[in-house]
Image (cartoon, rainbow, N blue to C red):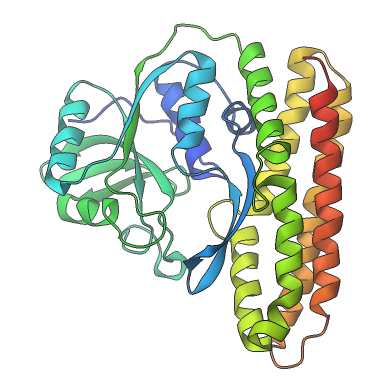
Length: 334
């Protein structure tokens, strides 16, 4: 059994790619920046209490699954989003939904995905893909970051659905249950912008949003004296991986959100959004500066080329730029 799902598009970010391709199946056309913006995917959090690869977690996007659920809510799409304790029950439910002719999104771990090239495998549990059919013991996968149709055995799919570690997927699956014939994107765009403004400016926690970037800057300054240059370099290297390689990369999210704001300007007839989109791109450029200078330190672990104060100063400048963007967005009466 295979769904009529032959024209899936490649994407920069797996979950926004899932939204684009899943809605295309229901004859709803949306591009990736619009999906990311409507789903309020833009975020920042520094979580020193959590570790990935023995390093503190720095997140540049919302938690996996939230982009899909927020986008669906804003567009008036009914959906299911569930996890399972029992792996076999999760596979039985996947089979049941597929039999209804519904494509199913899954959250999985990347490290044991057999169709991912060995050099790209990492312990990353927030990857999203779509199951579009089943033949014998194999599931057919539309993965928006891998070209063509992919196949995976029942056993391997169960394994990656229950990958261990930070942000373990726990068999998570998500799919639409009722999709409107047409969607007016204006109000979803407005709702998406307002939610990101709230998340970046108004959550009363020092580790989240613009406050979180400044908190991260203060923590980073102390890494060499508190942990030594080698451990500081390890922590910094993991952050740079999150910015440039893991998933879309945090910088990619900044550029994608800038593209969304430019499209929102055309949709809503608000030219000021185009100016703000350029400022968002400038913030993304400063994140690139952070990565470039930080990578030099990682290559010279014992004697860093730049002080960690220099790198922390870049973060403070980024925080100022992103705060300016979202203060302006918040003031606009949409």
